[in-house]
Image 1 (cartoon, rainbow, N blue to C red):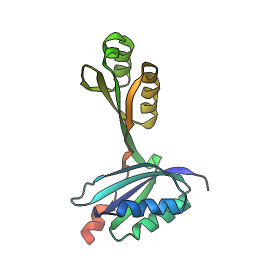
Image 2: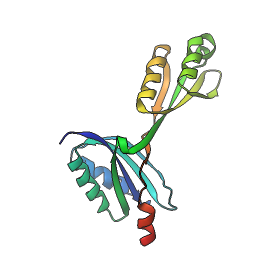
Image 3: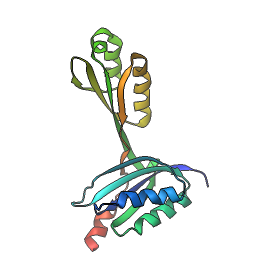
Length: 172
């Protein structure tokens, strides 16, 4: 079996220590977590972990099985990239003088469909949401001008098919 990128969605109660136990499952198998995002889900009082890994389908099945054994976990699913719609977000902090002195910066912002979030005397901040490749492309274009700070979020995703989590919760 060949390695692929998988997005694992974990629906759970929001309890202290769960993230540590879930990350331990990956650690024991020497599988690196490429991206991790935890947020509220579409279901009240239920959190959703979105975990991105690169491994084989056999390993991801084992991992999902181990995650589901955690008492707070309601259900876990995994998907390949073609089965999901996903985005990341990034923000870039850049010296303010460049916004006014370098016309090319304004063109880069416009062409990349980025947004200026704030402008101050010393810096301005650009926000960009999209595929990782789009964010990396924007980073490469801005790097020659000097990036003061940069941060990118973990992947957020929704499945293309209906998730049966609501039906599972209704049956409980």
